[in-house]
Image (cartoon, rainbow, N blue to C red; front, side):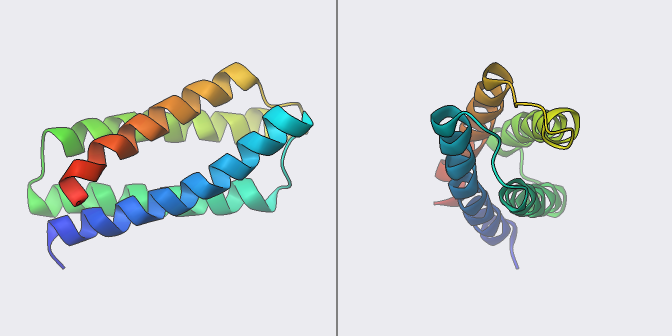
Length: 119
């Protein structure tokens, strides 16, 4: 599989993860409670798979520029998502809305940078 095909697959994995993110944000911002555990776990699994594939594609395909910037933003978003999960969700503490918004902004920007490369 060539590097651009891997970027396309990674982008679709991020889009699937984003659907779970929309559900989680709706629950947190709308209902005022943390989402059920299965949703963030599936979200993290899909996003982690996409990020792993994207890093591999950049490594073997020599991709730079927008892809590298997207990887950096998505790594920071992943770190923020891990904090949201381990520090708050895991301890059944309400997830902070501000940190959630920063996580969303970083992830959406990172995936947005991938779209012109993938498609």
